[in-house]
Picture (tube, one colour):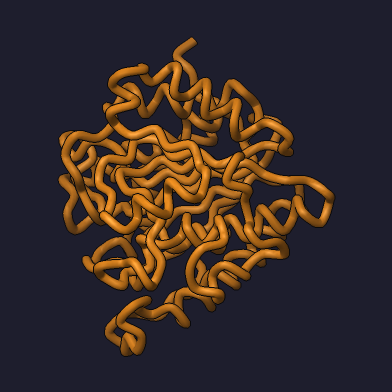
Length: 304
């Protein structure tokens, strides 16, 4: 990992969820020391600043089934272009949100870049939630509950068609890890889609090492590598309280680091994304500090 330059893009998206505060996530992540941490690892690093995102109070949600869909789509179009430029320079994109709706833009960029080269990508989605709703199934209309479905070809055309190929990622190369809060109608989409879903029950029964091994095998089979989209709310709120939608019973701190360490060790990481950091709900920036440490683990930090 140290051979590739890392370029950070902040996406202060606060339109996709129901709680305010995640727009401050990129700032909290920077304040927690990502630049200094990467410097200590000897990794070439550049902070590209933030993608412009309108404030919710400056817009009216016109579609209750997919609130602020047009604004989120425009932001994701800009993010796709930024990610493609990073990849074209041979760097690794580190995208920090903001709510999880930003993943549509990140994955559109990665998928399109590799599709243009005749390659497919894999996807590991770490989250307490499946994010597999559509405007027809969502009980809230919050788009941050829809991005994985969109990347797999389900839901609003504005998001589904963001990349050069649809679906952006093949379901048989997609893995969910850590889900334990899934909406009723969402379950049917997960089962129909063909993605591999490791619930917290699976993590408890199989153990995180086996889950990670199987996830990486799925995400790298016939691909150029994989993107890791890491929603910090997949971690237990006991040590990650500052997240957009906290749910008790999540993955432990050590299990989270193990995932990141194994991702770094396999050498197939194409892009890294961390979302839903909410400083308003946090204590002394501890969740952003955890996110920085997890990112450093994914980018090569080791004890020895």
